Image 1 (spheres, rainbow, N blue to C red):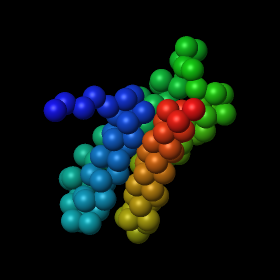
Image 2: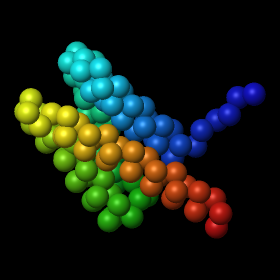
Image 3: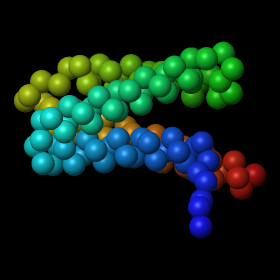
Length: 114
């Protein structure tokens, strides 16, 4: 049986997968895997920023603004990973992804229930 995911579920899955990739690389202390996971996460957030910046984006302005700020935050943290605070900053990125993924799924569930 094939189940098709909604756009919200696909986005939540992508954010969760990026979080898991960063977490696993951090846990293994694998610099190459962490660099690849951070790069993938940055691409994901760049795509989010691009989508919410389009005039035809149907999201409310406050959500669009928050996602844009989170994208900027992700880029800043990614490019400023000093070795002594790397784990702490990557954990912040992981938590951001998981919280946004959870919010997407909760918002989608509420919309379906209405």
